[in-house]
Image (cartoon, rainbow over all chains, first blue to last red; front, side):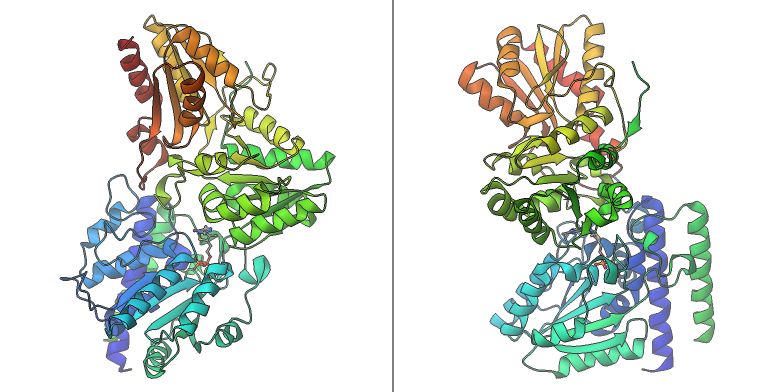
Length: 282
Length: 315
Ligand SMILES: Cc1ncc(C[n+]2csc(CCOP(=O)(O)OP(=O)(O)O)c2C)c(N)n1
Ligand SMILES: [Mg+2]
């Protein structure tokens, strides 16, 4: 990837992180940790990979995105706002009475949201349904779903995996945000999911392991996915929960609470400084 | 009257489990990655060896609980009400209900007062779902003291029990010196003869305040707290219908299948009088701070007082 393009993506991803922090601060609640860990991948999807048009969000031929770990919508909302699906100002009303941006994604009310999620394990199955419809209708759109690593404990994830491989859904890419943490602690301590690569492989997936914050590796993984025919791809992305806000990084505590005023100010200062630094490099 | 304790019923539940476990080593607790939220974490801290985190796998957890109970344990399986009763409904029905196993199911973050998480997490159907399972006892305690007593009763009762827990910190109104919990028995909190209000859970205290207001306006309103929605106290309902001729039910739940329907089942067959069901009217919730939502849905003191006035005017 060209350096300038990478810088542009990094700037957008940092802005998305800022949006997630703004949203969860104003909501006094929400899930910053997993929003920040998945921000780079979501940014890549919407700004490089996916064929979507903010002016026509329900185009039947568009690529689809399902945030199976729906609680991480604050950064998805920020990415959608940056892409032009709705105004950035909506982020300030996240989770308020009457707001468009709900605590978990609502496809009825929010342009750009392809599936309502929030109950873990279900989004990836819905993504299979979308991919199946694409095959059935002989359309060449692709479907992307982001799962949490804790979410992989849900049996439904593996029912979906079995189905996707059985039906040769090579138009489906499942990305696991492996930030290593869930609510009650590290995934390996709560109910371990490893070896995740071998699990997906044995379920019939093409498996790619990457650093989920490295845009070169993210790009290579999605390109690889497109080249593999006859089977779905699982991208296992190693990430840091809370990435980009130093005091949130790798902390279980930051799974599901909004920052207070002082924390918000520290976080925005860090993120704004990073944006300025990256812009200086462009 | 004892000091008012301001505490979420999930917290009281966690404390009660800890107390009960001292005396009863058959109690084991399971959670599905929400121990900090359901407050089974309090038990986990005290009894790490008797606590099992099943990860985010509610269906599996319920059937594991079923298996544990067949070996003499008293498993308490907790998650959010939505995932405990919704995701795992069929496991509960077939692995716990049908064999009538001694499993206690705790559903936290029930109702609209779950707040900002929004519709996917605001469970408005748990009471309806659990009521449909033969042999299931359904409990919905209204404050700290009632939750302590209800948890004890749930453990002592042999058979499946569903217990509804709230996220929101609420004021206690019961006096522990005089409070008495009897499984399956409603509590007349206030005598009255013009109309009866029957409430359950978090809204009982709101109804209590509304009834006080109506008293000041010169009305005589009976208030009944139903902590056991199944089996429902038929006698207290029949008596109220016969003596006051009109009933209002109040719950933080869909009006389909909850307390209102349980009351109507008794009233329609035994003592037909008009029943107005107050709750969430067959719709999903949405995000917002808990008290703002309760206000919007007419489930606070003012909304309830208004409904009582409307119903009194019909007499
Ligand atoms: C079916 C279901 N069970 C429980 C929850 C509550 N919950 C929300 S987030 C979460 C932990 C998710 O961990 P992970 O998938 O690793 O997400 P991330 O670390 O990316 O935030 C849980 C248990 C839920 N939303 N859905
Ligand atoms: Mg995780």
